[in-house]
Image (cartoon, one colour):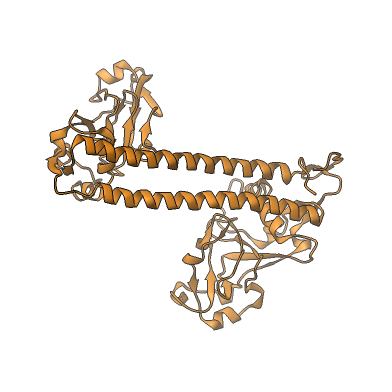
Length: 406
């Protein structure tokens, strides 16, 4: 850390005295496949010796090599300037413009389609990795906002891109910043991989634990639970809304296991003047329209709109077990849905859904195992969210010179 940090005013704002503002055009080459060499999708190969990167291959700041297609050698040889090298920085110029990727390794010789720029510094005084983080930062976001303001632009034109100016510390500090942010990326990636692994383990556990055994009993869902619909008060009557009664819609369900608060609330008058009913705590909300089969467990009393057939379990079944069991029934629910305007599953279809369940004790045991896995996943996802915020804060501090690295 540098204790003394003399600042100067620049076009980008206050920067350390030994930092410069540099221009893309003067300091970088910017290459893309030229128009007459454009590839058609008919030329994409499933396998081959020469890879092709397109804008759809960008994922999390890197290239998803498993998603890439291949091309003939002739297409690879057409332009040496767009044959990729380790350390290249790529930017999408068509479609969703401004996506960034760093080429950290090359599985095969690879070229670009016409929708991607490769940006390379003209001298070794600029670190590719540092420049990559600049493009991933608020500096480039602000630049894109300025050139697209008030328009529906779907192209990042070279004539505009070359006007991008950015901050640049001395090379040793560029490398130190890039290393610090790379470490943050590695932390984030390790958490993402661990979460993916834990999800696969949970998926396997569900398949094993919820598979019917010989002593399990066949039931209809309606035999072990009451199925309840919902309703919507008139949106033209203001006194029906903004009350104290939670009121869920299908778009709020399916993301988390437990539901504590809805986006909108209705009043007592709204409840009385609609078909909505107050559902008890531990009701399983089951979406019956547009996203059929999404689930959540109420941890407060609440109502829903008519896009639900919610499950109020009786005392012969474990709520958490039924939640996990129903999460395996989405495909079956969809098969039982009908409708010309939109698919919907009726309350009778939900009631007649066949489930195979063990004793209450075994239900509770299975639900506990799966719940513990969910708690672990939730904790890891919390760590991931924290890691992403830490990296965001690091970028804000390091790329403005407020925190110095040597």
